[in-house]
Length: 217
Image 1: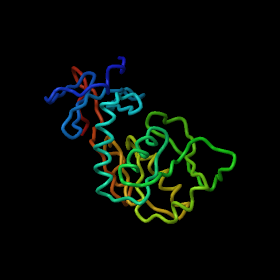
Image 2: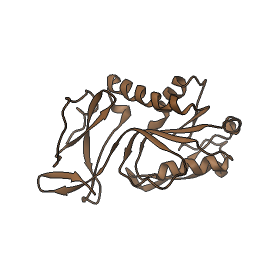
Image 3: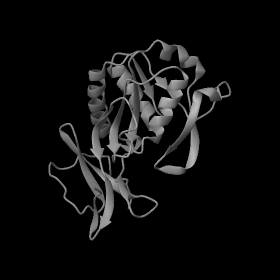
C-alpha cells in the first residue's frame, strides 16, 4: 500500500471502528487525521505511522501548533531536538516558547565530537541498525545554564531513542524536565522515565484478526 495520500488532508469528523484495514484515525485538536497501518517485521503486530517530513504544510502547521501549545505550558528554558524528524519540530517549539535557539542532537559524528558525549541509538523502524546519538561539545554551556530542559521528538514508541537522549544529557550533567512528541505509539515506553512524556495524541499496537487489525490489549 502506498502511503503517498496520507498525512496530506484532515479526515472526516467520524470515528473508525475495528477491524481496521489500512488506517487508524486520531484527533489533533479540532481535526482528525488518518494514519496508515504498517505491519512490523514479525507479521504479528502493526503500528500506525506518522512521517512529519512527508506531511502537507496544512497538516504540519496543525501538528506544530498543537505541540507548541503543550510546550508553552511547560515553560522550558531549553529545547533539545532529536534527529532526524524531531529537529524541525524542536526549532518550531523553541521559537514558539520565545527562545532564541535550541540544542540539536545528532547521529552524524563530526571530527570534533567526543564519544564520551554519545550513547547507542536504535528505533522500532530500524531495530537491527544501532547508531550513536551525539551532543556537540560546543553546546555544553547551554545545557549547564538550563533548568527546564524539554526533549522534542516526532514519535516515542519503545522509548529507546528517548533513553539514549537521557543518557547523553546525563553525560553533560543535565537532566530533562519533560519530553514532548507528536505521537506516543503503544505503551512500551511507559514506566521508563522519571519525567512526564507528553504528546499531541497516542496510538496503540495492533494485532491481526479476521478482516484486519484490532487494538492489542
